[in-house]
Image (cartoon, rainbow, N blue to C red):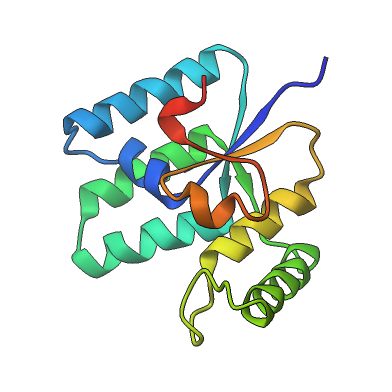
Length: 149
């Protein structure tokens, strides 16, 4: 039996690593614990870590950085590869050719990089847990994080 693999987008990664423990953050942390307890493979894509980390650094959020580091150590890391970046370039160009970009013209566009990381992973059952199903769902299976069980 092939187990499902969940890639965390910035929304759920930020919530799960939030030290403030608002209701949504606590719910997301509980959701993540439940996935892991069920044997789901959960990955932190490098591009997602970058998105969350850069904002925590900008805002001087030391506690958030510490929780992000702890979470990243507890979960499997998915590094960016040349294969993924080349696929991301294809997705970025196609989105612009068809008039459906997922970010501004000058943007690096983390969504296409995350989608390309998911595609390059090659797992049979990969889903991206996100708060932005519309953009990611164009390229890969994506679901609102709270809907993945």
